[in-house]
Image (cartoon, rainbow, N blue to C red; front, side, top):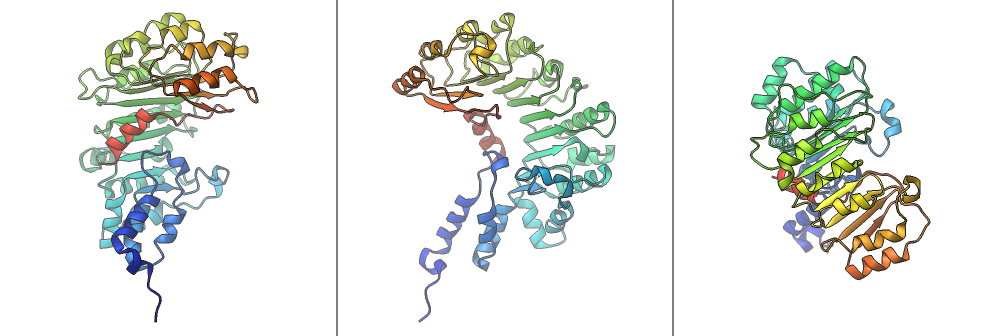
Length: 393
């Protein structure tokens, strides 16, 4: 007698639930998205295949090794044509795969700007349920007709990550490309701008009038993002700003006070590189702040200015290198935050041990997270909450 199959033992509904659990949630960091097990499941049998393929196409990363093997980017085969062939609207399978795409990452494939941009525009117009787009300016050199089609017939993208990458021409061209792309999707609620260029980020003109709930700047070589940030803040926004990451090379983030005076009342998460004494006066403008991140070891004035409403605190750097107080004084400061649940310290001097800090956190029920490097923090629960809300529709 033949052995019973897994489908007959567990039932197809339970099998599909297992497949759902293998799919990486969209609110998780896509750089650690491993779909290899799910891909294997799609080839097991016909019962599993369709559902597994839908889940595989829910989050598409092109090239698929861009994060795992960035050193091979120059020799990576261009996968945009294969993706377009898979979502061919002339076939029933192509249409339902295109409808499955919710998150799309497209990085530079090494081809010409024109061909990459044409392929990306085609992909966007074929994926009606797309909510999250992560791409680079080099792939987005759209003509005016394409921009109009994207705005009128494209997907309702709610989350956009745009990399202003290494320029092959004038920096102004890449800035204009970024501005045009943002303006093409008025439905954006979460916006992340990254720049590898040693240039300024000029303000949007005209302002895009978006209702942004999350704005992030990852600009390691830009002196100041103040004017660009201010131009994104819409006084008539339908929803309040909740997450702001304001980091650039300069230690004096201009326009921050203006933004906090207008939007600080509803802000839940704030990340800055540093704050000068005159800028610390802006922090009380955020009475509902839940998470505060600063890219240095805080001094006494900074600790005193942080709203006591926070549940998460993230700091970086060494106190001795910055001339601030010793680590032993950190533990008493944490006691002054009655709602603190998570304390993160990146670039923590290791292998030093901090018994007083650990003892205080254990007594108070505070989770401590140490990192020896200055890696980008992914512990922002508020941002994950917003991604679940606005991407997984």
